[in-house]
Length: 145
Image 1 (cartoon, rainbow, N blue to C red):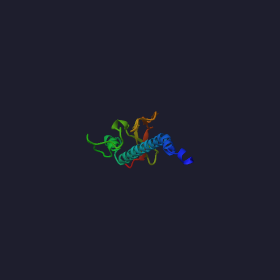
Image 2 (tube, helix red, strand yellow):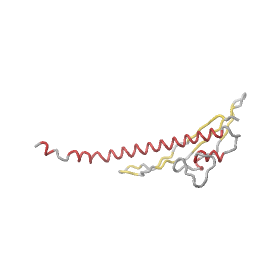
Image 3 (cartoon, rainbow, N blue to C red):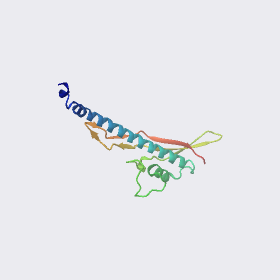
Image 4 (cartoon, rainbow, N blue to C red):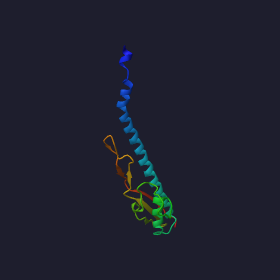
């Protein structure tokens, strides 16, 4: 008798827990994508700072912006950005600073501001996953010239 009253209970429990599992899966996936894109931009900013550290101060700024966005110094119209929504307008003008007296140490700083991560799933079950604007991402390296 007890077995007949339990028929279909497992499918009902699964149906009740499925939306929660889907939400957790989507949130985890989108968080992972956001971290991946942040790391991609951070690495490209470091690459641009490294590139400028061996250039004369106040030169090669457009090439550095292309390096941040496209991963190469010379970009064409058909090139895709390394991270969705990233453009050269997000790259601020690199700055060089001098410090010390003997020897004078020169550093170069490259920064990306206003980069927005856009979720592939804008909303699910009433949750807004929309977009998130990252804080400025910057890298500073010692200039070798």
